[in-house]
Image (cartoon, rainbow, N blue to C red; front, side, top):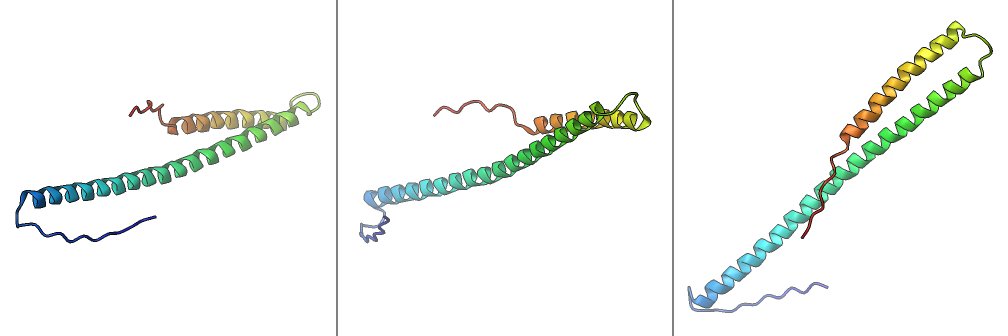
Length: 122
């Protein structure tokens, strides 16, 4: 519940009471403004962090798909009869290339992760 109250009190011009009350009201207005700015900073951070988390989630999903693709090709090679055919060699070469690319992507995703932030004590 919010209650707004208007109070009109008249003091002699430039009296100590008027100066004190003006100082108090100015301080309260300043604190209210600081709270709004702080909440805006929190909100901005939360929005950026949500975007960051979505990007990391998408990267992880992509890696999961890549690992499945590599596993499928390994299974295909294991089911290949006898000697290595030119097609099998091409598949092996492709696995090596994809594996190296996957390692690079995982490293890039890891590099996006910020360092551990020390706990804040208040």
